[in-house]
Image (cartoon, protein in one colour):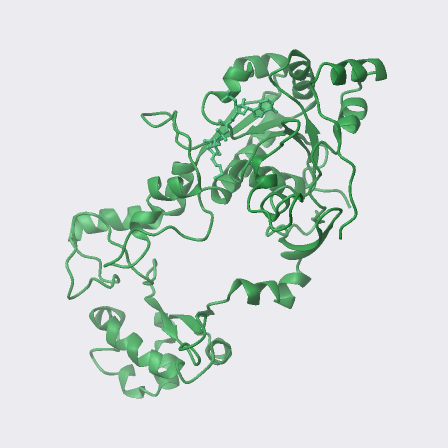
Length: 426
Ligand code: CAO
């Protein structure tokens, strides 16, 4: 079976998380992704948050599957010659250096475009053009600058960052879509183009419901589904909404049996209007089906606290999985709070390849996420991440077709590092 992006070659000049997420997705879809790393150290994440001394971290391995690694010192003449040859042999260049770094290297868009007019040059930056465009940005900076932190957390608490890496992995996803769109446009235009996904913009795109609420607030000075309604006060900006639903169907996180000792014994319960009568029967409040204070959604909005307290009396008598089973049988949407431990052990996620066990020559076996996007005619197999410079020789000779003499000269110039030998896992 062929793969969706088979035949697409990607020069992967990314590091840390945002860029590597993007290129890993492209690799999972079948692109040949060649990751360029600095000789000796490589992507900084190889050595960050290590759990095994001297072994590539899970941070690195889980973001760099299905790629080949070539070490090139771009700040040498020989290194730049290799990079320029790579640019001529690739369809896409992806990078997420700090603003200006690629220009300082000598690889401006004009230079890249001149070397390969079909090249798609895709970048993650912290901010788009404007007053912050020169700033370096990490995940939580983007979450804060993109509106997520201001709107996450509880009314009486600090702005809060979320565990979902919407700044990095979220932007990587946006960039991947931009690249695929540019590849498609190139089939008609014959030309490459620049693709930019600023992290602030990507986070804001994911927080669009809060921009919706900002405008509703400005018009009506209140937000009826927020916990601040009806007793609290609204200011001039969208407040933090705790665990209230971001949509038109009120929801909340409720305790389940065992909550006193289990930090994840909770369920998200949505009081979806079409199943309201079933909810009333389930929790033992059949009278609410016709009572004027509860029968219709607008009447319920000022009473959400009371309603969720009553539903919680019922959920606290069940485990989260019992609530899930009983509610699903009645089409009531609920979601158990699943811990990472529970997810890692979830058999159905293993069966779909969303969680995979990968074998690595120095690390041994570890768990990773696999491709969350399922294509029926393009299967994703997760292959281990490369060791630093593991494919340097292969890229120089087989992809770039340098002669043995040229390869020797490139190496002698210090432009590349030696590929390390894989060691057996202990
Ligand atoms: N050979 C030689 N030099 C290399 C090289 C190679 N193969 N690869 C990178 N370098 C050099 C760069 O040219 C740059 O040198 P100069 O500063 O002298 O021009 C240097 O390495 C550092 O690059 P950087 O500035 O991108 O890295 P940093 O660690 O200082 O900053 C980060 C990291 C993430 C803050 C920054 O890259 C950034 O803001 N990126 C854009 C936003 C982004 O993607 N953030 C998400 C990161 S994950 O949270």
